[in-house]
Image 1 (cartoon, one colour):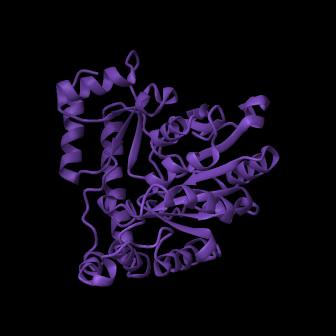
Image 2: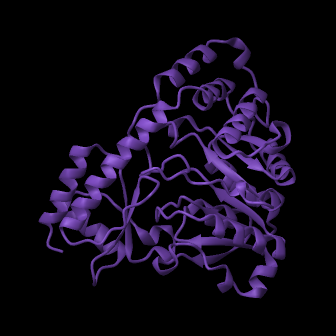
Image 3: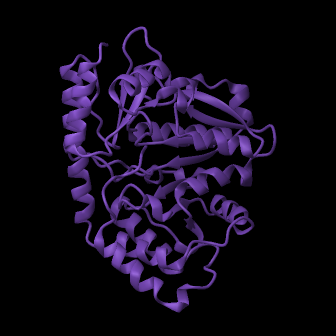
Length: 350
């Protein structure tokens, strides 16, 4: 699973303890989020990406980014409408579309195209009917990253076709070797067509805390907020106060997280290469996207690793038909376990 094994930094936990003891935080929170948290998000985006945001109109607090991603089709997709969904991809893009009665049109991500969707391959009649396009870079499950040129092409496409772009940037801070992923909203015109989902889950090892946010176009933000105000009652204020401590506190914990996963990545990639796998070393995320041996399917190879080696991987077809032929490995165990996994894979007759 994509669940960090590293603990939440102590200063964030301490902020939660203090906030949880305050009776002012025991009542219903604001539907749209604590003003102080939204202000912290806007300041963090300015520092990190040089993107200016109005906290009141362009930031919405989420109960984890998954919640917002799943609900946004309910705001903009009517039964029968088309949503452009990458394949392979995080399954919630497809599932949220289905829950709203929409029809996913799969954009296949291939190694030959660096796991970026080919926008020119989208049939014109599909593009005309599409309401939303989901994209996600750095990418789960492929670990691919996107260029400014790609984001510019997405903005241009969305403007021509009147499509809402939803960029899932949950892994933007999990990058290595000096690489710093950009925000979709850094591109001129992006704020007129789309929003960006973000999460504290991976950056600060807070997956269980369920805190995220979405930023960008105020009309789109308002649409999602209308849905949320009828579905949930907001995020516990104490967790939002802890989120402020995360965003505005010492960021050395983030640097340490990146060093840890970079070291694990190197051990796993070198180990797999030593036994005959061809694996591209990822520049971001804590995933490896590994081609299965010739003659295997995603499911058969994952099953063999489990049955013969006691190794759990995720078969690529679980992320959509475009993931067939791969398994996803997550670097969410310590170095010793990674070395043991390599040894076990080596002992299996491939």
